[in-house]
Length: 127
Image (cartoon, rainbow, N blue to C red; front, side, top):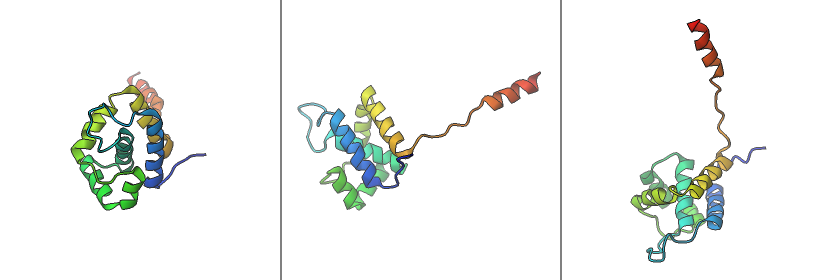
């Protein structure tokens, strides 16, 4: 049975829970401590969930109070903060696997069309 959901608050809650177990709260001890790494990771998962860019995600977070509350954000991060967080968080192999597993868990496994039939067809034509 698939765990496909259409609820962005559910997806954000799950991503935040998974990231809280894996990631440290802050990247280093001198970070500004405005947003935690799990919060930024949950925002990046929402970016993929909504299929939008960083600016579009900031607009959605600004207008969607319940979603902001779910992630635990008091204010909306600037889109460059999200972009820099994606470069930092997705550089780590563990975080990249974490993002892929979270998205796959909620969006379901994509079905790939096998190209074996096309390959056979091309070989057949060339003979």
